[in-house]
Image (tube, rainbow, N blue to C red; front, top):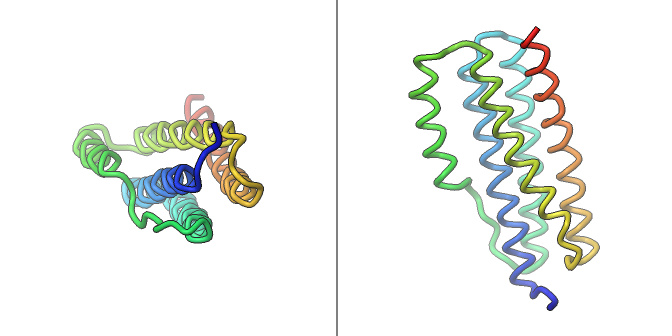
Length: 150
């Protein structure tokens, strides 16, 4: 059964939310990081994710929908919890682990969206463009996490 436009709007909006969650997560991580290298990196990623989110919001508008403009309640609650937990286990390792977990989440979300073959070509292109940025963030965090283990 073919999706309606409504389904496409929902799909893209859910990616908007996840991407905003991710940007917020990076912004928080930048505050929590000790090392200047991580602060800069996380701040850059946060900005990059915001621009990805705004591209996706543009796609929602093109589809005739009302774009989401904030993240999910769940992620906000999760960050509060993490901040409480983190105050006990500070350090860049803890922050990197947290960010990397967030990256796994957003990666899975985009991979699932890309399996949806029913979206129109322009929507797909918008998702793929966002995915390129998301994937590079994910892979970079994975590599950083591994490098911290040695």
